Each structure stands twice: as C-alpha cells, then as structure tokens.
Image 1 (cartoon, helix red, strand yellow):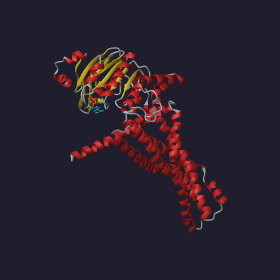
Image 2 (cartoon, protein in one colour):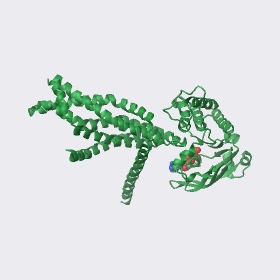
Image 3 (tube, helix red, strand yellow):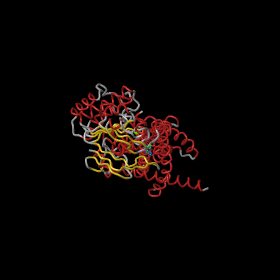
Image 4 (tube, chains in turn blue, orange):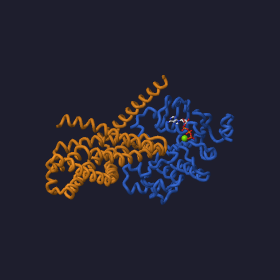
Length: 238
Length: 260
Ligand SMILES: Nc1ncnc2c1ncn2[C@@H]1O[C@H](COP(=O)(O)OP(=O)(O)OP(=O)(O)O)[C@@H](O)[C@H]1O
Ligand SMILES: [Mg+2]
C-alpha cells in the first residue's frame, strides 16, 4: 500500500506540488491525469525518492521513504519498477543485456536462469527475437516494451509508469496501455501511471486522480470522474 | 552599478558552488574506490577503448616530436661543439616534460572527450537516473570504471610516447646526422636516471587524475539535450587543457625544489 500525505514541493519559486494526498491500495491501478506541467512527473519522482519533498511524507509498505538515505533508497528501488517516458535503456547494451542487467546486479541467478527469465519477459511484452537489437535500432513503441520488461524483471510489486503513451500513435498507445494493465494484473502490481491520455486512462484504471497545478482536484472511479461537477474536471473531459 | 556587482557576485558564488559539487563528486568516486567497489570487467573494457583510441595519434605525435627535437638539437648543439649530446637533449626533454604534457593533451581530446560525451548523452537520455531507479549507484557503475581506466591508461601511453619519441630522435640522428646507432642508445640509457623518469611519471598520474575528474564530472552533470552534450564535452576538454597546463607549472616547480 502507498500513502501520500500532505506533500509539498517548491521548485525555483514555483509551487509544483501543493498538499497532495493520495492512497493507493494493494494491486490497484491508479492513473494520474493532468495537463502538461501539472506536476505528474515531479510526483512520480518523489514516489521513487529521486526528489525530496519540502513537507509531507510518502508511506510505502508503512515506511516513510522521504526519510531514507540514498543507500537505503537504492535498496528500496529494487522492489519498484519504473518506466521512463523515453525508456532510458542503456544504449551501449542490447535489449537482452538491458533486461538482464537488474538480474545480474541483484540476484544470484546463473546465466541460464537469467536467459530463461529474460526470454519470458520478452515474450510477455511481445518482443520475442529482438534480444540482439540495440536501442538505437528500435522504434519508440519497442523501446517502451523493452523498458517495461526491464522494469518488471525483478518481479516488483510496485510499478510506476511516466507517460507510457506519449509520442505513440493511438493504436500503439492502446496496445501499450493494455500491456501495462495485463502485466499489472498478472504480477498483482500496485501501479501508478501518469498520463494526459483520458481515453486510455479511463479504460484501464481502477481509479483516476486528476491533478491541476500541483494539486489533486478529484479522485475516483471512472463513474465518479465522469459525473464530477468540478469545472476543470469537466473541461478536461471534453 | 548594483546590477553589475550583483551579477559578479552571482558568478563567483556559482564558481564556488560548482567547485563544491565537483569535490563532492570526487569524494563519491574515491569512496567507491576505497571500498573496493571497482568493476574489473568494465575497467578493462574502458582501458581498451581509451587506449586504442589514442594509440596511433600518440605514436605519430611522439615520433615526430622526437625527430624534430633531434633535428633542432643538432643545429643548436653543433654551435657549441656538443653534437654528441643530442641523445641527452631528446631523451630528457621527452621524459621530463614533452611526453607527459603532450600525451595528456591528446588524451583529453580523445579519451576525455569520449568520457564526457558518453556520460553526457546518458545523462540527457535519463540513463543515469534510470540506473538509480534500478537500485544501482550510477557513480559506481558508470563513473568509477572510466576514472580508474584513465589513471591506468595515461601513464602507459606516456611511457609509450617516450619510447617512440626516442625512436624518432634515433632515426634522425643515425640516418641524417650520421651518429652511430649504438652510441645513441648507450647515451640515452646513461642519461635518463630514476629522478627524470619518475618526475615525469608523477606528473602524469596527477594529470590523469585531473582529466578523469573533470571529464567525468562534466559528463555526469550534463543537461540540455544534445546541445548540452556538445557544450559540456567542449567544456570538459578545455578545462582539462587549462588545468594540465597550469598544474604543470606548479608541479614542475615543486618537483625541482624537492628533488634536484
Ligand atoms: N528539476 C526542475 N527544476 C525546476 N522546475 C521543475 C523541475 N522539474 C519540473 N519543474 C517544473 O514543475 C512543473 C511540473 O513539471 P512536471 O514535469 O511534473 O510536469 P508534468 O505534469 O509531468 O508535465 P508533462 O505532461 O509535460 O510531462 C513544471 O512547471 C516544470 O517547469
Ligand atoms: Mg512528465
């Protein structure tokens, strides 16, 4: 379970997060929706300890991660998958090596074990046969698939995805969102996705949170959001 | 007036903040090394890449420099009737000064630029941050191997440069000036003593340290997309040159004072 409590963050004289409060239940898929510059990426960076808040706390499995040191954060992050907007695969490694990297770093698996596990992950994300390719040879969608495989390879129980559909066409966007949903259900991951893609978000989310200028305007299920009376939410829906 | 003062003030503060960050970064690197967190395989890969990259150009430059030194040396020394000292001139100039400094210049332009550009593009493509999200320390994984490799490769390149420079001098002296080859070799071996060799090498280690530190730092903290990579890489090479030149004056002074 993840709980964000009264989170505040100021960056260069600008309040980027103002009193953010959210609870995400075990195994739930939450989509954080908001326009450009709303503070979605900053929020995710707090959740994985890349940024420290000015005030407030973030409880993950009843530990306040805002108080952890970088060493402890590195430990914690082994249990969290993080999908970057552009994938952020190592460009000096091929797809196989990229996905195998966390296994080599954090497990005692032998080579054949790693090979089997990576093959399985490649199959889950639909990238069979691309193991030898380098990131520069992949399309945007394939990069995201490979990055997703790397994010889940340690069987993390938490998955954060930053704008998984940005830069993809509508069909690919749907594929990737469905893929994230499938994986999340299969591995029983608590999942937080940021997006400004209303349609896909509502389709896969258990719950949606709408952010505007660093504050949460509304949270709720698809039905709650669609029937919201909040002026901004209504505007965002159209 | 106040505005000018304020911007100067801001500039000075910026320099000190930058220096503080750079020192903090260096301590992080050294901390990893002291704790033995050195990835041998990565280091070997870096040694190979950095070494191979600079090898040909170091060879060419050194051979040519040695040859030119011998040509000029003949002209000058003949005036004093001291033609047989050409081997001394070539060997001592190379070992004490030219090889360490020139090789460091070449190395910062080749390997240093490579380090800064590689780390820089990783930084702007979020690969460094991604390393942290994978639970791995990016300094340990990406920086330490490059830094350690610098430290090992540059001294080797300098010794290589000294050998090739002496060969250049030998060729000119033997084939142009008609000095017997065996005489040239014995003169060379006799003149280079322990102090000459190690004073050059100590400088080299210091330069390697500076180049590794500067180029890793500039690369690691690169911002601003592909333009940023260009900007920070140029900065890395320029700073390396400046710091090698300046520290060379200082080090030479210290070494001469302590050791002559
Ligand atoms: N490192 C930073 N330093 C200063 N300001 C920042 C930094 N990162 C983000 N901001 C500012 O914080 C605000 C929120 O940025 P954020 O990247 O979280 O937006 P976002 O909701 O993810 O937008 P997008 O949909 O474009 O990705 C923006 O106004 C941005 O300018
Ligand atoms: Mg964003």
